[in-house]
Each structure stands twice: as C-alpha cells, then as structure tokens.
Length: 128
Image 1 (tube, rainbow, N blue to C red):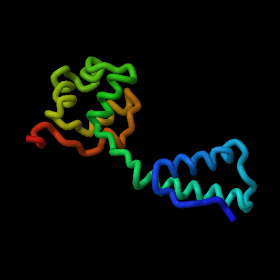
Image 2: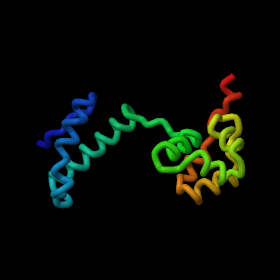
Image 3: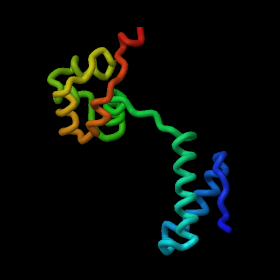
Image 4: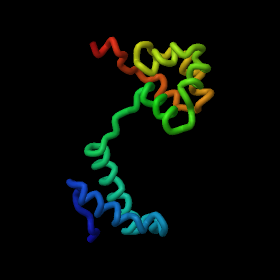
C-alpha cells in the first residue's frame, strides 16, 4: 500500500513535499506504483496550496513600485515613458488610472506583464 495521507496542515505539506522530492531527480517509471504515488501526492499538494496559501493578485501600481524598487527602474524613467513627472506621480499615488496606451508603453519598455498592468485597481478617491 502507498504511504499517502491527507494534507491538512503545513506540517503535512512539508511531509508530502519531502516525500516527492527524490522523484524530481529520479523520475519514477510511467505506470509504476511510485509514479502513481507521485501523481497523487502532487495533486494533494496543489489542492492544499490552492486553498491554504493563496497569493493575492498584484495590482498595477504595486507592480510599478516593485519595478522601481527592485528592477533598476526609476520614477524619472516612468515619467519619461508617460510624458511628465506629474503624470507618473499621479499614477504612483493612485490619483489617476493607467490608460491603455500607457500600459502598452510600460510593457514594451520594462517588460512587465500586460495582465498585471491592465488589472483594475483602486484609486485614492475610491478609498475616500
């Protein structure tokens, strides 16, 4: 019988990941009991992570701030792309939404994901 159990806690998750780790370097033969064990554990791990460790989607302003703080870009560079320092400031301070043209410019220049840049996000007046 396969050593498989439900994943209900992070400790169970650690056990399951440790159990399949050797299969990454030495994949089991297709159709073998080890391959079945790998498939079942991988499915359980995915299901647990999907329910217990969800990651909130990043909004465009957070993405821009990340690019400025961690990817070597600057607010001045963003201002050049958008045509003015005030426009860059308004967007970073959530006073103005990105336009489709701005999204395309930023994507082309900084290679940030279109799906993130085009996501709806709250503006400062929405919070008031």
